[in-house]
Image (tube, rainbow, N blue to C red):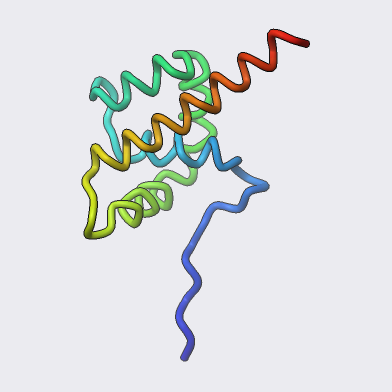
Length: 100
């Protein structure tokens, strides 16, 4: 028998940006440094909306975060990488909005 394909949330359901945020929301509790940094990056209202949007996929997103950990890294290293990517995306979106 072949291997089962890894379960993923389809891109039509959540964007890659939303998936990264969802993985962090699924893994880190509110009031943790990672959660607070995430809230600072995207804003409290946006984070609430994303929490609702990603909630149905929380178990899968948590699993995906744990897969990212693998054997060669730590929670904080993966979270820092994701937060850096999210920060870049937010900055890029805000920068583009200045010229619209």
